[in-house]
Image 1 (cartoon, rainbow, N blue to C red):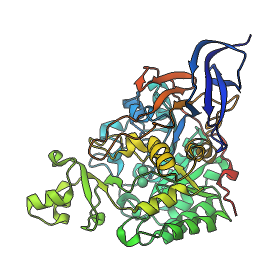
Image 2 (image 1 turned 135 degrees about the vertical axis):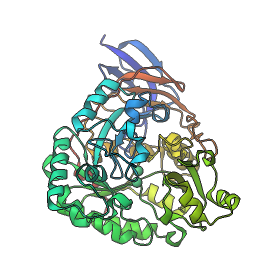
Image 3 (image 1 turned 180 degrees about the vertical axis):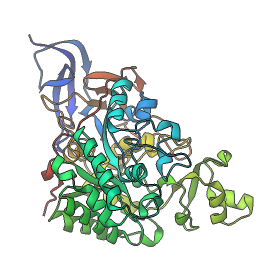
Image 4 (image 1 turned 135 degrees about the horizontal axis):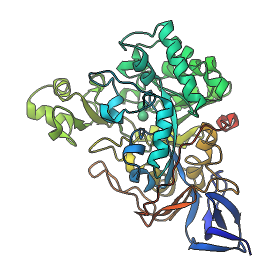
Length: 490
Ligand code: ZN
Ligand code: CU
């Protein structure tokens, strides 16, 4: 009888394609899914009873800021505990590599990735090597950030790059792409990239097509001007002839609520001509650094950290301003640099965007915040439990598709994202009836419920929400992006 390392018996397999679940055995050997089928006639070193549970491909978190954490905290428990087996880093224009900092304050919002001492990857190669040495518990694929490149080659970020500076940035992007980077990300809303004209990003994006990369963007604005910002993103994608992934798509600010249908129609319209998609997280609040331009009394704003006033972490800006007897804006000024959670979205918009077939799941979790937005620990189980099961937003198999097979094809992650023979054995065994996010805004650092076992590259890495100590993740070099994965039904 054929032999394998691990045999998971009688699980309900949700294979990542969006198809209905089926009961089967899954055999794992040498980090790979060796067989999938009913009642496999095999012996195994280790057999796991999967009866009554769902077995899905490990979840892919397409939008993370885990760049330095995969090396500094390689256990990656906030992610592994959710069933995440791959993180994509380098989002929103900020990547930890290739980064060469100058003395002084970190350009906004690089501090999301850690303090200056966390930036120890002057070249992309140095980062790839660091991941190999650190052996994180999850796989890592990476984008290169436009803002990071600007900071490497420009002495002031409040202006457009010169032709020479753009050339230097492009050469550095090219080097990273040749070493397996997925593509380019931008964060045009942030002060350190806002002065970059569309043409600068277009010129920088030119090498992407030759390598088969993609362009992802935290757009120029998610407020009133969102359609223009989408148009800018699409122009860049068309010019570079590569797919565009709009990061954390949302209608931000009460003035903007209810516009998600219009925004999604714009995405669909472009999608008929050019591959475009988006990611989203399952919450009505966003989080980033505290931005004075976003300070308003129309929404609740919570301070997550503050360099000059660490004691206010977790408290509302309104409360702090009241106590200090100053305006919201003055309070915010005193708190900077700081982090914030903005309760800036409507539930209807969040649901409409999550449900859309163009949308994949990304947490946008901020692992260096002392009191982070709960999306860091809760995103994936919240989509499965709260939105798929409890709210009935979509079938469970569709939820899984949005966090496995679909992103794997869209981002070019090769043999990931499906329960299929020959594919990498990144797997999660969970209970469809009990899976849920436990992390809340008040108590955000809580592992999910209902995740029973997680395998990364065939290695059991967590069991009953206890990490096994295995660290089987690796750097994932860019595979082939499947343009057909961006196609929407007419
Ligand atoms: Zn962003
Ligand atoms: Cu982000």
